Each structure stands twice: as C-alpha cells, then as structure tokens.
Length: 229
Image (cartoon, rainbow, N blue to C red):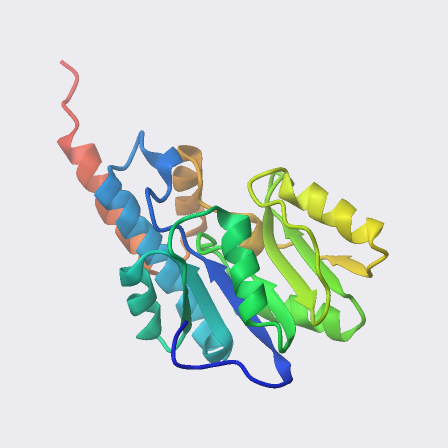
C-alpha cells in the first residue's frame, strides 16, 4: 500500500478501482494487439482519474493492482495504491481494497473502463447512502455486471464479480436485510469490453484520452487495411 495509511474513523467516501495486471481487455484482441490493449487500459484509467480529480475525490482513491507500473502511474495523479502479489480476479482485488479502507464511512467500487463516467455519477451513490441506503448498486447495460458498488461502513456483502454480479449482489443484499438502492446512468452503464463497444463509443464523442487513443489507433488500422480490387 502507498505511504498514506488509513487510521481511525473517516466520514468520507473511499473510491476503490481494481485494475487487471495481466492481459487487459482480452476480448478486444480481434481489433487491438496486446500493446494497444494496454494503452487503452491506461487511457481509460487516466480518464477515470481525471473525473475523480474534478469530483475532488482523488485523495480518497485507491487503485488495486498487481502491476507496479500502474500503481506508480496512479500515484502521479494523487491517488493511492494497493499492491497485489498476482492477479487473483476482480472479487479478490475488490475485497483487498475494502479491507484496506474499512475505516471510511463509505467504500465506492468502480472499474477503470467507464469512459463516459461523470462527476454526477460519482456523487450519486454517496448521496443515496447519506439518505439511508446501506448498499448502492449500478448495473452494466446488460444488467449482468456491477459497474458501481457502494457499501457503508461495517456492511459485508459476498462478492460475485465476473459471475452475473449485479443480480447476485442485489439478491445477496436483500437476503441480508440491507437497505438497497439502485442507480443507473449511461455514464456508469456503458463500459468498453467487446469490439462492438469500441464502435459505439465514438457516437458519444466524449472527449478524453480514450477517444484520442482509439481515434488515432483505429484510423491507422483502417489506412493499413488492403484495399479491395
């Protein structure tokens, strides 16, 4: 973990971002080679960090990864880092982040691949928690993944990332008798995970590192494609 240690109670919201250290965005391999997928991962992470800076939440942001370069990168923006020995899956990374931030009033988990994420999205879940929700969930567009999860202090919820997580997280919270709120927006629901997501992303024209990188990379690939005769 970085030099900033967590001690004593805290009334603010910690943000936890798990970042894969090996073979990021493997489903995009039909369009992007390993080096390009890595560059896309970094571009999307930087856009997320910039949004957190605008939301004034960067000092409470903790990135969990087995990749030392990623952890060094996020420190430059003012975020903290939590190191993993190896990639053990999203649930394991999130659990590590939750344990490290247990003193915070709220822990907000988001992935690093939400290029449409807005300041309003980051503020929404803590607001719902202050109004009484113990758990706030935001689904992916397909309603299978969990693209935002907020837990208040002391709440423990079995994690099911990469396993129909939204439905299982919701059912688990209800079974435990917790007060649950669901928040949805395009900024949280849309992620880049499959080739079709890349093409859809251009329709939104959201300025940032992700748009710049994909525009440059995909245009180069188009120019390099042999012309039909």
